[in-house]
Length: 563
Image 1 (cartoon, rainbow, N blue to C red):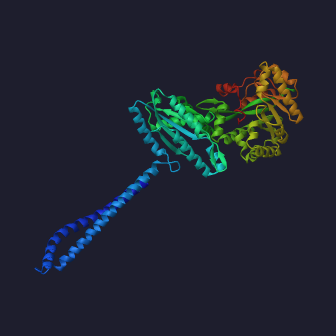
Image 2 (image 1 turned 45 degrees about the vertical axis):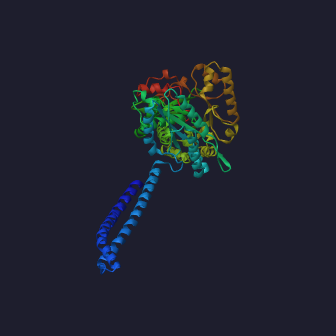
């Protein structure tokens, strides 16, 4: 039951009781008129000495009527006061229901009817309506670092700054948390006015906010939708709920594009959002149905030409989408918190597959930065090794340079724990991040992997700078006694050049596309550890044509975060 409903019921109950009291008072007045007409003349005669005076019972009845009339009048006055009190209380309850208490803006409940009313008003004058949704970037971090009192100050200051910038007749609402919405009317030919307003709002709100001795800096992201969008026949006429929905999509797009900016809603944004939702739902189903499978890319000893190991790469055999490349689903899995389960499934299957290989062949797996935040990751890996009786020295975990900057102390502890179990650690995509020499010295890496972009320069006519960079990395590895692997070997010329640079391992399309577990098993059974081009191995039918296309993707891992 809402507060307004409770107040109405209380008013109705009070009014019912007072109706009876007023009825009694009205009857008393009528009786007073009747009895007074009989008593008062007798009283006058008695005073004149011409009569015995009124009957005592009638006098008592008259006095009782007077008392009832006084009671009724008093109750009537109290009733008026109670009605006024209830009216004020109901008005206060309505304001509480429609207004954000902290900022005194409208709230999500009230912005919808107010926006619909503004849309109708704008239509009558031939104007359009723009719905602008704002979200404070990293507001949770402000709360966590400075406390909720500072967070409340930021919200109130933001609302005040926005209100001061809006034109007359506009609406401002706090939708909840750190989300705000502005609704304005503008002329059809003056769309730039909305852009200018949003730019000023972003600039004004982003000014530092003083709180005691500290200053809090914030940025905002915004999305804009307008009734002009209704000209699209695929969308149709727009009401407040639709405008809010589309502005929310545009704001989400602004956040994905780097934050502290704004975008107008476009129909493609909704399609992308629906696609992402389908991906998230598909990933959850795929985890339950075992649709994520490991593929394997050969790692070759350039000196002997033998297969030294395989790097596991993730593929998603989706019944609806076909074979999906990890560049698409790995980032989504990381953001939705499913990367741990996904990677766990793939690593477990890879341990089963690698257990059937020559025991001298190693298995390399990529680990997401998200997984390194798990303090129990090392224990989980040990549990998998014990479960499948897989030698720890045959497993090599690859991490990217970006992992080193999130929490260096935690990463150092994790690497040490994994190496204590016998697992080897590789620094993947070396040269593309921000690794320092001190980190190479303090973190016990077992291998450096030269990023494919440097190796690719050798085949793109940039031999001299590419050779110098690779020589420098190899010298760095020699200095720290860390072996080197070169990624992205695409042709024989690049291979021969790398052979002259020292004892390296290599991998790339020159040795064939990534293969399924059955294809790897067939390759090893046919040729043993000796490396040969894929064309020289007797054909092994693939499960689907889509898997061949998946192996031909130019990027095999999702930015070093591939499972």
